[in-house]
Length: 231
Image 1: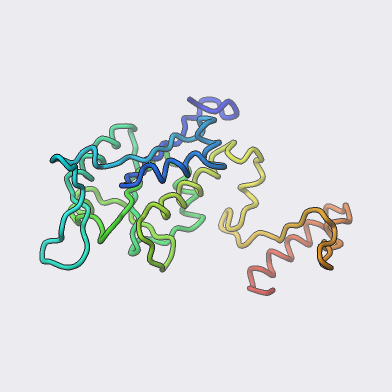
Image 2: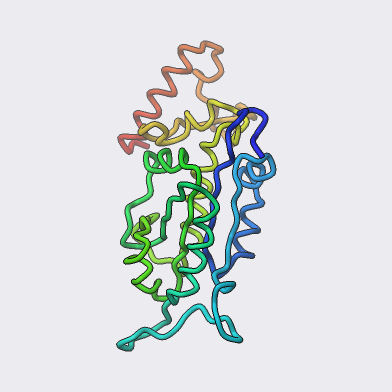
């Protein structure tokens, strides 16, 4: 269904291919992403490739040819899952979590948020059989130069980032536009709320002045200061 605030707009389809769908489902029902799902702004699901695995145990991994430590996600169940998911829309865009991938940043997130259907392969163990790369050419992405146990956390970062940019997801049209890095910009300004003073630290006078121009100037100065790495 489409959201009432954006007549005629189809929800963004997001499919996560993961060995841990239950863990992802819990998070997909939470906070902004959960509200966006319930409002029909996105249709996000976690899909277990075991459904396309053969054998009594529905194994999705195996030892690597040539030896070595760890296990590799096998090509047949991953390919079967991808083939099925690609039938859900006319223009699916396939991505894959990978430490060798392009670093995810806000300009790229803004581009991906305009897509109609995202399929994200969550890597695990020693990785995915290289033939998935050769056959499907997924776009690899990374959330930084660090090691995590699986691609699910990186995939959920992507889901959260693109969901925030869906019209109506935040309930305030200005919120996403003023986030850090929005539109290729830098960091956001500092924020304060009540009480006016806490443990001897007071809210800056500019924010209490009621002068909108002065507030805007203060916020612009603080964004610039943060961009320079000043404290």
